Length: 241
Ligand code: ADP
Ligand code: MG
Image (cartoon, rainbow, N blue to C red; front, top):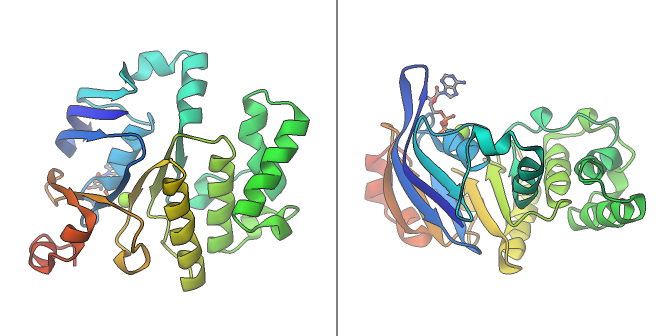
């Protein structure tokens, strides 16, 4: 489904991803772990077609993703419908005047009729347990509430792949437990989950695979998630724990 081949990424002349080779199959649940600045967010932006490899290739379902194909409006809509991205900073994702409009926005962009929009928004508000918030202004919500709204707006499009950048950041324990259960259920229902995290305590049972990024911006380990997080010597050696 996802194939990143010999990919490098640079901001000006600073390398932030070095020779990345990763294949992710449909239905996987993958955690990205690694110290701050190792390149996790950059990798997720690449998966979402926000940036493109400076060298190397990224294929989604066999199709190369680059600025040229995403310049095609139809292709771009189709791609962004299949791959949903929950930003690290919810404020960068939420811009509508109320929660209902926020969750409906992407559906309307896709040209869906209002009856179906209403049904899907209702489903997603229920799934995230935020029906009570539907008339609230996203801007004034708490961090945890904003995160739920952002996830609802992404799930509304029913993406095949759900990509999340540090979703547990700034969320209280109850919210984290809710998110953990939600991610597990979504993966069980067939969605591919790719998620950066360093909140190991609250993601128990969510991931089967871990990609470990090092301070020098490489993937140094690609392994069973449980095996990696229980390898304390390794985590300490690479400044992850
Ligand atoms: P992580 O998510 O693992 O903390 P990032 O992918 O955010 O790491 O960042 C990787 C590196 O890229 C860091 O050294 C960071 O300073 C740098 N970086 C991120 N965004 C930019 C940018 N817009 N311009 C220049 N450097 C950036
Ligand atoms: Mg990051």
